[in-house]
Length: 520
Image 1 (cartoon, rainbow, N blue to C red):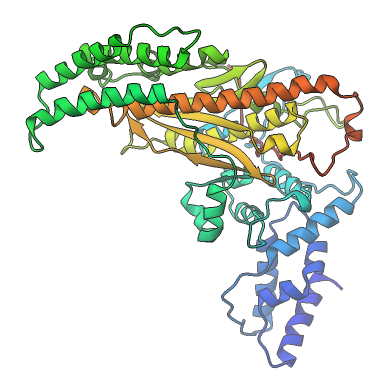
Image 2 (image 1 turned 45 degrees about the horizontal axis):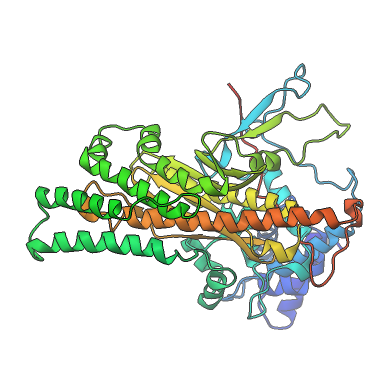
């Protein structure tokens, strides 16, 4: 029976039973039929809502009002099963027109040798093209049900897929990432589910050692003592500001030298605080307020954090393309027989990459624009671009570890979000199933006043040390797993066997943007 006849039959059946037709009940009754008559290239809800409403309108019938939505998740599940059961052939693949403005093909004489640079998610949330939507739906359909993230109430984090499928512009949900601080996820999960998603798994930030805590406590006590001399209502004077700088210098130098081979972090913290005191001594931060560039902020302020990673041999690269993102952007390149090789895409380079032994462990973005406190670059960076790059990095780490689930659950990647003198840190992990999670710290700001170092400088330095510890533990985990591969008996990847104690789980890639611009 064709689609119009099936819908009409349901409407007639409901009316004959003395009831009013509803889309929810139609979807429940005809789930298998809907799945069989919908391709992954189509917008499931829009298609069937339109068909159903048109049929009801034509018969001049009143719809039944329902408080809950149709069960589209069950339909998508049926669609995924149908997709997996179909043979992989070009005759079964949906023919998707790709707008010329969205994808640029190499010129006929290039033979695919030109490189293009993807500018998508770093600059804006772009409209999802048909190609992107098809890839997203096909990726979801290929996920194994028994490996999905199941919540304590029996629901799956698959609810994120339904949210993404209903939104036409790119969102982190299209990349199988849930951002805990995104207010829109309150429309997807209940408060109980969100609480579980936020807290399950590895704690985001480690603790500092007692010596480091002691240095911060000593410096905080000095600042507090000098500030409180004038009473609660008195503003801090210039004399007090200068005395704070001198007193902190005396306190820090009183520790003597720390042996960097034995106490690297104490040595780094002491040297960094002494350098920061010169910011206040010579009004460096005041000078930065006069039309600075992003590079000014990097050179004069944020580069001091890079040296924190020296002892664990992690390189802090500036303005390099992200290898993991480049791999994702080119994952479908190959010899197809239907045309010349697609042009290679290069990812847009982040402002900072944490790199060690051919593996990337973190990213950083620096901005200078202030538009009512938040610039477009900052919004896109924190809510889309950085989390996607972190996911690319985590996927590459997982691959280095043979996609062993037991290891994936402990992997983490970090991101510095630095705008002017403000900074927060993102931590991405994968605590369950195929979905990654992003958690963000509170934002702190470097104040031009030494009397406010406790509120901005100290927390930022603590964030740097905690981020370093995350990177240190993750690099050790990845490299230890790579070292263990020497004991394995090589075989074809398709013959890789998993067991209950160490399952294999291949994380889905972030959505590939189709927007390209020629590299100049």
